[in-house]
Image (cartoon, rainbow, N blue to C red; front, side, top):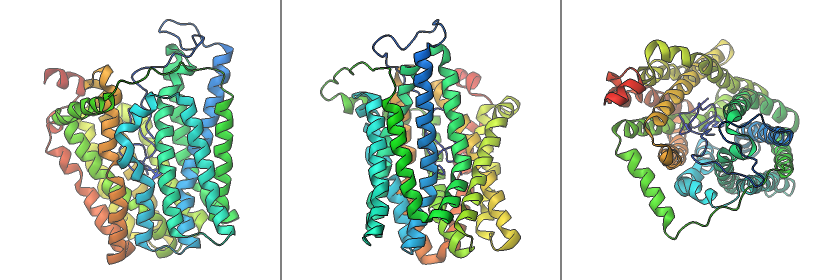
Length: 460
């Protein structure tokens, strides 16, 4: 199920809302406000000719690396909680703690991550993130073979996987201009977005199949291999980055303050941040419990769980196809709040899920909710791009990411506590009801009186 995102592009991943990778929570397709010119003038200007054969080869390797990572992230999103549930018999509280550990990096390092990555070569950061993921995903099956596996080990692995994902994603966003010229940047980003959407759609089903075939622990071992393949592909890219300029002393805090001031002084950006954080808080809580709910309460097998979770990706893809047409008919500003107001109440179908035909209630609720979140993401990101000066875009994005992702660890704790006290189904009733109320934040904002962002923003 997609989550509201802090990305600068449509989110079908958890980059801005708890993507289903929890996913949620969502990856962020924001390009850096400044591009890196590789040595040898690999990056090209606005009027440059078509990419050279070397650039095409480099981009194909980058795309292949992306496929490994996006598919691997979505498979791990299903396999890791299934490892906790099937091999360690995790409780609702432990499932919530595991989800909180996965997202804690966004709260701890969300603000400074962008500035730190800007001080390093981006490809090296991505390779280091891939190698870190490979080591961490190997740790779980090795511990299982030695009979040393435990929930504390999974918590640590989840936390460090979140850190690797955060730094890898931030570096990834800024690396594409190194590979292609500006004349093909839109095409390149479109292809990467297609990879993300397809991985979100296919990942849970593939994960369920492999968990059924190899077990949850064996599936995680397979994902370690995909991370190694991704690192090898990145290592074969021929383009070279220039050494980043050393940052001035104290510059990091100054840049963080600038981003915070820009977001907090704009009344619509403030309400978008509050709305997105609210949706993330409750939606990510649902993600934390859905695997436990479908396996133990509903009684589905792992393969069936994977295919049921795939429906959220279908909703995201359908929404991405029709949002542009809807925004022309209704206006981007109006569609921003309508998308949540109309779709979030369908989440109340999730706790009604049961055996037999009632599984369709989960499928329908997840599909419509995911479609609504994807439409919301596209619209609110459009507004941020419209009003933010180009030189502040990176810092504004990092600030929004921190504000809207920072609630994700709290969400896991909330879901785990509710599940422990009220049971998994009772926790889902609370979370889906609260999620249905989140559009009220937008209805009390200036967005309710606006139709389109361009004319209304200029007029205001």
